[in-house]
Length: 418
Ligand code: AMP
Image (cartoon, rainbow, N blue to C red):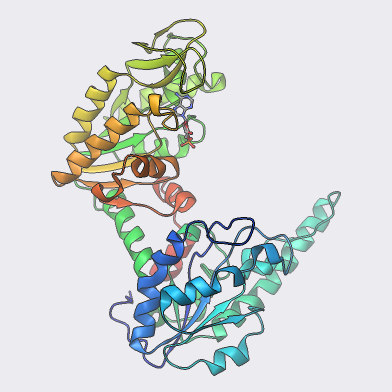
């Protein structure tokens, strides 16, 4: 497989798919430029080699073309400042030939939001609400057909293709996956950010050093079931915490007060317990909980058994006994995957369980374990506790990471790796 480090971009035009989908305020000012900065190592390497950049990204979910609210023009000046090289702007990503031809080594061209064309995602737009199934199928077929020409056009701008957008790697879109077909293996590669993400996922999922512990939290079993199922075939230890604790507790006959619970998932919870046993996976569930008399940071609190929660009280965090038990398992682990908080960590009074989990992961990491934190709220957790730089890797790709740990093949990765 080609790598960005080995590739010399001198005199070459590179189409780089980045994720510049940054949050903007109502005046179109960038409120968090993390994603722009994250792509800079790749973009700067290409410029430093004497290459020419054609930068493609999406922004938001525009429903029409063009939609000024989602224009990448808003970030042009900042991209230029971060890159330290001239960056021109192509108002129409499908009509940029002249601007591409005018590029000189060390220069860049930022294409307007690729999603201003329905062909980027390959999904029909503007269908009438009462469209029949036949009309929907015809519209889908039409956009899939025109997607080929759209993709070919993007590919025609460049000599090589670099994908540095892990956040969209789970989408088989024109610029994230389909475009790779137009470049031979020598001329397509991951960017640095993508490479770090892919390597981190492979370290956990394929090149696993044991014991391997997956820690799953969050609010519901139902949204995590695909990950849990996949983990049951891979891990030595599975820690399940957060809101799903109470579905398990109720399934086992516990009294859970008014804790969050999916009553239609009680059988599923029992089957997870059975499957863990059958697979030789040690399953760890909370034994005690910090409960509250209302869903609020200033609620009254007490610690009780997860199976004896008083009426009118709800489980908001893991208790002290559970924190200790989980921390012991985590500290013995050599590979750790964390997705989802231990409790309602947004409230400081119910964040201590998540903090204890994060601190145990940090300690295991300091002792040589590889730890991957990702998928939404656990990232917010490590950031809240100021521990993000003390774990091995914090993933930037929410949905993409979740699909990777569900065991799915990501189109954006497959397109490069083959
Ligand atoms: P998820 O998006 O499924 O990973 O869930 C994250 C959310 O789960 C966070 O906003 C937490 O506040 C919430 N959560 C965690 N534990 C509980 C709990 N015991 N009760 C209610 N919500 C919870």
